[in-house]
Image 1 (tube, rainbow, N blue to C red):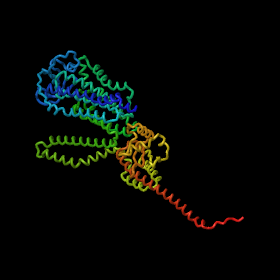
Image 2 (image 1 turned 45 degrees about the vertical axis):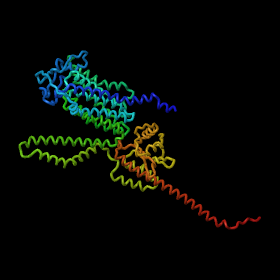
Image 3 (image 1 turned 120 degrees about the horizontal axis):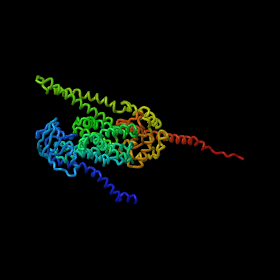
Image 4 (image 1 turned 90 degrees about the vertical axis):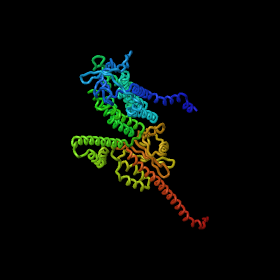
Length: 613
């Protein structure tokens, strides 16, 4: 009754209610900024060109329509009477001046000229036609965070993951004014501060999450100073560097705009290095697979951002790629974290990485070859009888002929690099199955499983737990494996359903099962497989780690599952054979007794003579 009262107490209900409401409170922030910047675009309209914030002004990027007398590369240095630094600082002004964009001052080379900008209204349909990739990305990040929070076990730092994705979504929403060329100083200032502050918070929370994940390598548990340092490092580095570099104080915000991302590449590198250092020290093969996927995603996500956007922006004040490319590549890393959190059993991670890289290489080969084909057509065949359509047809035929061989060659090389060496040869399964099926003696079968398989398949340890009526047998003989306190009935019930295998590092909400799995892990057991016969579960096979230190792949699981199914049937046959042998022995004993009794029966018919005194 006390336990029931505790479970239904108001305090527990309030806690559960807070846990359900908390993620929606977190995502309220990015949703609010999405609404604010989307409304500003619909309210102010667009001058039909894009602007990018630089150190000295708003640089005009892509021109959508020739509505205003501007060129790509022009620099907006003044709006009405406000200089660029006062525009950036407008959000902090105590008494902001009226600064409706009646005139703007453009710097083109060494020349300055002023004009009144014209604006076109932005309809909701046109807004969505331009902003749908950003909206899709932002809502995808928010959805990934929410789904992770409600689907992942509480042991994972899912709340920090949700907060980080929400901050990144807020950062992306702040790019709407630049994309539509909004020239209102208040909106520009709000966009500037939102980008700076939430970029710092997003990377700080990302470091907080990385140093908390995975659980085995949680470096910030009970270390609030570390957590505070993660969130303060980026703003302190950027602000102090801007103070040092600026001359007059009115240049501070310009330098801050240029140096606001100064610490972010180092923070991303720290997260990457932390995962690289964690990988060889992890004892769980499942967590190794998680980290392996994330390390691979870092190259495709932060690589373009650091090399082609952040560093060129810091060094040359001009990025080499657009922010849209950065955004598209940036979704790869949170997607990898999401997969690592949701799909804890990443048994196919090596195959996934190999295939992804092979297709990326193929896409780049096609893009580069097509680009050079277009250059060849323009420079060589202009004005001649050979038509570009004919060359393009030849190009398509060449792709159809060479695509599959090239893909096979690339996949073969990447498989050698990424996929762990197989534990078995293709013909070994049939041979081993024949040996297991022909083993009618339990002693021979257990020796085959516990000695031959580890030697031939590079397994450090293999043990059998066999259920014989109401007793449990250990093979090899009880010793180190039986020292930990194991609940064999609990393991039996955990694998009695549809599950054929269980990793010792699998998180469990059952404290008894978690304790049993931890005991097996301490005994250097990695994987538990069910030995199923025709009548049900007949035993368990306990596998240690691979000798090469690599985690088990899905093909290894399939191989050992097949072996365990054969071994389960062989165990039942061995038990039946033992019972038959025992029955034969009993019958032979009974027969011998009957024969002996029949031999003595004729002597019983002879009269008994009593000795005479």
